[in-house]
Image (cartoon, rainbow, N blue to C red):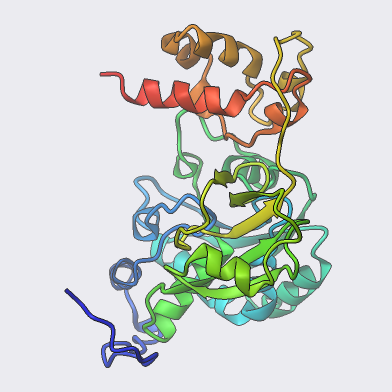
Length: 335
């Protein structure tokens, strides 16, 4: 068992690596793996695996679009660590052998757009693209479709269309691992929502108790509150805040509880109108209730982003995403 000495000091093994020009792609992948870097937008997929795509990649897309409303962690990282983000992108471009990198930032972050344009003005293979602020712009398949005009095939990955999508905080962590030797032990977390007394973005050690973080923000305004890990749309409800901050914890929100009650579907079709993947959520609900998992699979439920747009707009307030998740889990369990 490793015991803490109670001192916030670096171990002698934490030291800068060679300069980027001297590192090989294989060495960069080893550094990223040893640093424990994962996707920090919420998915938590190991970054070293993403940097070894099975197919040729021509573009690295740096996702500067916040995953959800309320959250501003990536925006803060862009402003505070612009040079590190650019360095991390350069490292990723070299590692996967891409031709260029594109930093995608939403049009409501003018300060970040201006700063990144200044930082990349003299770099030929990196450009900044301004995207419309529209949820779920930050989903990687939507980002590829809107920026690259490429469609990731059903059941496919970004590499299938020549892209790798990386999160801003993840890219900064890659820079830290190379330039300082620092593993991923902390991240920026948005603590916000109308119930938080003093909302803000904070550098938080991985493993910090969520309750302690909320208390640091002054707690909540009243007891009638719903906590979510993540954002209001794709985040999951916390019944107990005595849980640790993890590598993918981009936000903790405290909002008004959802006391709506579901009624029978009226087949208005609004869920289909708003689905970014052009799926049919109303059928997913019916098929899930009947436990017709093959029927859900045939209607491409596995392509669902779980963005919750359908549930948000639903006139009957049906918990569509929970039904979709149940269907996906059942399909994955099929032999």
